Image (cartoon, rainbow, N blue to C red):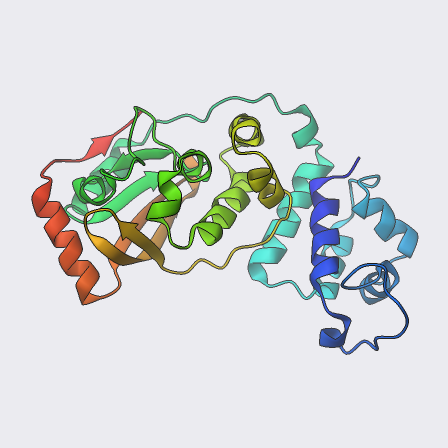
Amino acid sequence: MGSPLGDFVRARRDSIQPASLGLPVHGRRRSPGLRRSELAARAGISVEYLTRIEQGRDRNPSVSVVNALADALSLDLAEREHLRYLAKITGGECTAHARPVPAARDVRPTVLTTLRLLEPGLAVVTNRLGDLLARTSGYDAVLGGTGLLDGDAPNLTRYVFTDPRARSLLPDWEAVADELAFDLWRGPSVENSAWLTAELSAAAGPGFTRRLNRHQVPQRGPLRLRHPVGGELTLLRETLELSADAQQLVVLLPADQATAEAVERLRHAARGGLRAIS
């Protein structure tokens, strides 16, 4: 049986072209990327030890080994953070013993006050599971007719993977799906992530589980929408981490004049106030 840490190391090893690291390409390779012997040599560990890590038989590598693997794989800052996180949860065997429970949906009053200051802009309080916990009227005006906000407990991740309307709304659906699957690893808690992962694994199938286990750190660019009324919208995303609450405040800003004008038309068409869900 593997482990999240081993899966990530193996996936990154397979994705690296030897020539990019100045390694000679000799002989026939059974799989793409680096051989275990090449990665082990770069990290200064034995092939046997690397094999145990990749296969999940060693779940407690030292900090120095984790850092050596990060260097050997030429990981960027976000990938290094993910590697350290996976080493932590793998070492604690959290994923094996997590009891799935939904995340709390409460938002602190001071956060709600901050959100009100952003009216009539587009802003939402969410968590890494994709739960939409509170939002401005501007967010409602733009996303209200897309299906995302249907129901009493809207969730972006569930919407993207299970609602056919998401593929029409999001021209970059593949990239957004990659982001949301990756973020589940950093949910409010392992138990919360396990709760939604179990649901989506059954409802969304391989398109979801393949992304979840790939551990590909996403590149987060502008959010493009093909709005059913507003047309093509491009929104820049600014995210404020509310680390004490395991939540995020996300502000969406028009990236161009055409988007700004379309957003303004949608806001005028739908008047409302702050929406909090708890």
